[in-house]
Image 1 (cartoon, rainbow, N blue to C red):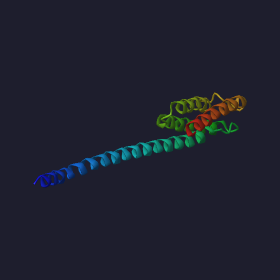
Image 2: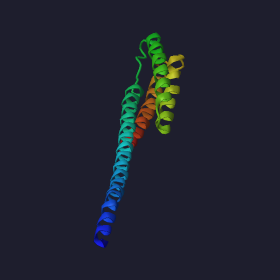
Image 3: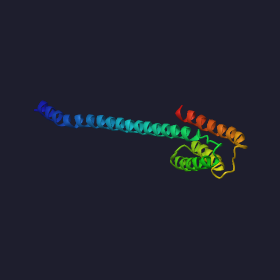
Image 4: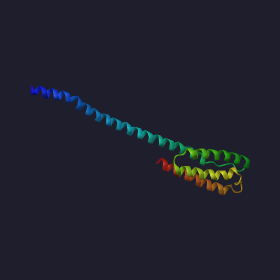
Length: 142
């Protein structure tokens, strides 16, 4: 009889023990899912940053044709707007500031402050701003 009680006790305890083991596995699985979710989020943020950088490098490379002042101003105004939109959507604060610096520079062309005669100085300054964008992007990508 005593052996029967021990057997019944063990039989009744078995589901409890199996259940506890399953709870541990469920917790491990939940942790694994959480880790995978965090990695996926980080990968998405990296893709977003890479996309922002690609756009930033493209827009920051703007060089107007100063031989046609009217067209240079129109092209510059379009770039000013594009730079503003890109700066607003960029999450990285350094890249955002770089884009705003480029935007201020391009605004000088859009307003007619930069002429063919002063374009060499503006171009040198603009190339420095472009370099800052590419340097920031290499840091973000690295």
